[in-house]
Amino acid sequence: MDRHHRPPRRGLLSPLLLTLATLLASPAAWPQAFPQKPVRIVVGFGPGGLGDTVVRTLAQKMAESLGQSVVVENAPGAGGITAASMVARAAPDGYTLLLVSGQNAFSPYLFKSLPYDPVDSFSMISTIGTFHFLLVADKDSPLKTVEDVVAAARRDPAHFNIGTISVGSAQHLSARLFATMAGLDVPIVPFKSTGDVIAALRGRNVQVGMETVTGALGQIRGGSLRAIATTGSTRIGFLPDVPTIAESGIPALARYESDSWNGIVAPAGTPPAVVRKLNQEIGKALQSPDVRQRFIALGIEPRGSTPEALREVFRKDAAKWRVVIEEAGIEKQ
Image (tube, rainbow, N blue to C red; front, side):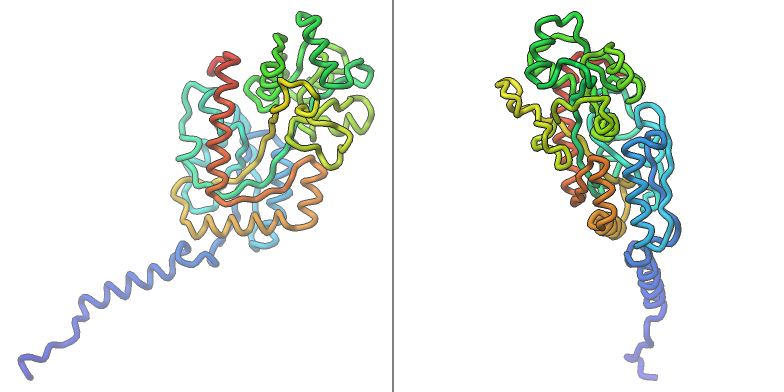
């Protein structure tokens, strides 16, 4: 044998080929391989609420496209911390997701400590919709406009109450922002549920309430509640006669705007290819006519986004509501 001739270096080639084969077989390398089993979306509230209803509508449509079940799991408790903790600790493989909202963004200012970081513990995927709140009164109330509300509250602040659900909720903070901007020194009375707020309105224990469109819409259409104004920057399409608070003509409220949103995130470290796949599937579901119709009927504007845009929504909401929370003197739990 020629001493200058060397046989192939099989000892080096074999590990390289093995590594290449492993990478090619990896689900992260081939996004079309995802999912191989059911996907779970964890919701930090009980069944039947707005977020729960919205995500179940989305999950059903996603399952049709993915060819795998998309299961919604309710994990209520501690203002959404229970659910967020579960997902933050889950394997970063795209099979465990979390429904998030504005409350997730400003939670660091409501709680003394969190077992996760609201942004860095998660891989952002997409927003799924935005929604406004309504300022409402009992049908027989003399309060018909925002001007009526502000005048009555200034005239007798000791006997004027605004009802919302729990302290630190988006409804509660929206009411607090309204009172602060209007220069009102009136109690914001928290209740356990939307039903309790409506009962207090009907019993005149509170003079106005701040609620989600979904929570109040049935009572408005049934004639037992009156919609005074919406908190958004624009009117709601199916309630065209209800003005925005900013349209009230009161200079102090000219820039008032409060809305909320829902989105989907995964544990931090989820492979980019899986994030892209989920983002595409969510976007596709939100374009479906039946999903859009259902969302709009619930008072939600279907709206997907890039992961980067969702991260920016977190940042802006945190900055805005931190000021409201601190000015209101809401004690951290």
